[in-house]
Image (cartoon, rainbow, N blue to C red; front, side, top):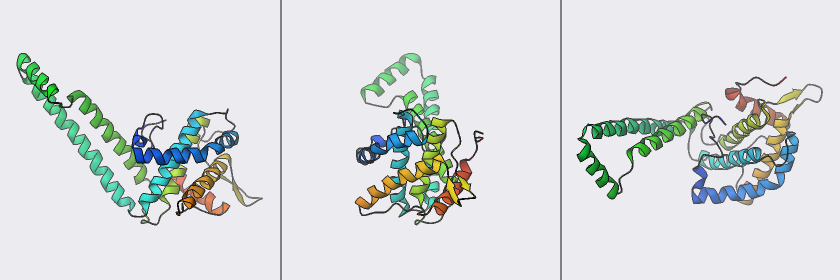
Length: 244
């Protein structure tokens, strides 16, 4: 998966190692598990398909988290905060590299003594610190790019649903090699397509989870509204050619 995408890589991104988030995601994964074979069948994939399952859980967890946050924050606030994290981390990289260069100017013997002292005092390794700061800056930038592609409509927007569609679209492209899309059948006057069915399947489960917690996951209820919403959400990331 392209690390510049909004949701990162389910296999390497460690955001869900935080205990409270990990516990919530384990609950979501357990609720989604019975639907995995159906999702694999919808996309004509072998079962089990670990990449699809991991991507679905990752997108679903982000949807629930984003929905909760969207109740109290505007997207403009997220953009501001993420931009600050990205810029601060990038500036810290420059500072750490400057410090490393300054240490390099110290006489070798004395520099060795200083580094040994640093180690015994529990100071962070500069090279590892620079690497970590670069990763932090890149992750914040990736999330900033994703958030910037969304329109700011205040705290009542369907942010959780948007995160879900974007995450599932990334996963769909990764496991099928095709761009996620929906189509409208002019004879039946309904939206159709494997991706639409996938979204419907996952939304149904997440709605049940939300209702069990006395909450709701705002999402389009009718086929027409759902199809139009997916088209709108996918438009900013609709960059790869559709398989003919």
